[in-house]
Image (cartoon, rainbow, N blue to C red; front, side, top):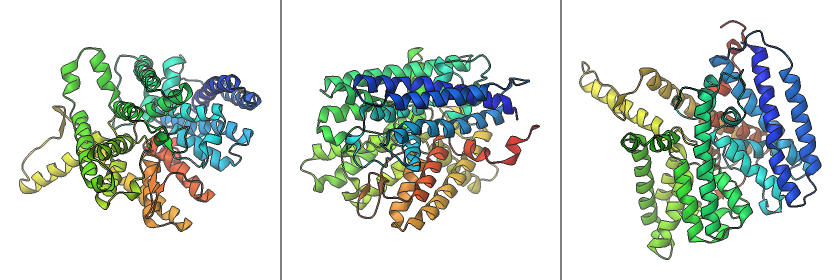
Length: 481
């Protein structure tokens, strides 16, 4: 383990967060809030700690897989801790446990909140919440690599540890250029949504924060009633469309920019994703029809919630705890599913589910004909055996973590459905949960112990389990591999 290089890189990332906090500080100045000193103190702390960490001079600047995992895991924990300090110092979330929960929920794009009265929070802190979604969606470290590149940051191992999905590859020869391309696409889509929401008469501040939250598929809103507060069909359509767009593998957008339309349009994962959205929307709309005034209203509610859940954004326009059992069952399945590989969405990912399903059918064919040799293919290409094995292991660990976390949360004496869906919501970075008698829209009533567990599994889920687990293995920190 190259300790000095790990510390040096983490230090530079903390310095980058200090620069990013200048943006909510500017928002605070614009709205004439008395919070400039709060951001100033946190920025000073970040610059001081970051500088101290960068002082040691490493003998070698090599970053391999172990260093990459360590950098990502440590960075996400420390960036979340320091990112929570503005809430604590301002007194708007005085509890460090609550503030950490809120900011981790932001960076991991979960969107779960401990705030009961969101509209009472300062504008600049509401902006910071939404901005953490935007930064965490594509990856905090990927952002730094894209726009604040360092010569001594060997970025591919870091990107592989941070970017969600079964595998991460480079679009072009340099990882920093890949990061920049991804963030440019990400930024263009975000600006497009802001413009579209402004055209729907949403206020500028609301449009910006909503677009930042949508882009990161997070779901933090500046309204207590989320998107339902606007009571606007046009706003719901725009937000639904962009949630689905941000749930698509960003590599497909790159292929389209490069005019490789045939290759992009042949994506099995994309069409499976579209199929799940269409079928789920149709089934829920038909199922909830007796509860609403018209089929159009049923389609409106079903379409928005399906888009919010499969992309793990978590915005709300309806209380799905009041829906029939079939619709609630589909909701839970969508919580597991998640969006496409290489998107900003959480969950298992459609690509992983496809590999798992194809693996099951392959084993069934082998049972019937043991001599047959069957390969698993996606988009016409054979899936590497290592990816198949890793996917199976990931799913096993994922289910074990859900079971263990639910066991721990059950000490809070809430109903089983509430405990289970809250854990599923946090590990899949979705937001709302589902109890036996209501939708869980905030986590303020949970104990500090449960909030710490939720905070941990949000981080574990966003970093796709292994980076956080590897952080605690003794072998990770040995000087020699």
